[in-house]
Length: 145
Image (cartoon, rainbow, N blue to C red):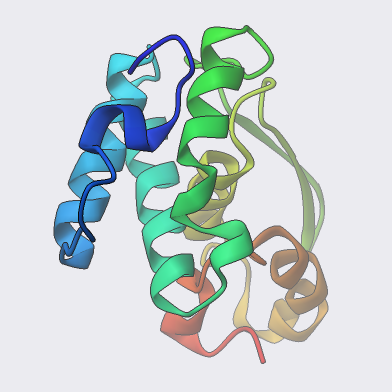
């Protein structure tokens, strides 16, 4: 990307651009990796941004890609976080995202939710609904909504 970091600097704005969600996600993934983001984190962010835009929530979608690239390059976001999860109770825990992307921390914690006992699922719903606001991962087991 150019020093301005605008998406139009890369693709131009002479005519409307049409792309599939897969192409947009791949573009975002490659741009994040080129900015220095580790593969797993870049994949989480690209997926979340694309999915959010596809649901029509553009304010939290792919339009944020240039901003995210700038904050990685500027050092505000850790591009190579070491994520950890500390269980604090039968249905609660704390995720340390190590100053990385929140999207990545959300994707990291989603599979951990399934290790909680089913009888504790109702207690866990609020915690995981809060963590997973940007994605729909917990819908796999009808844990949210």
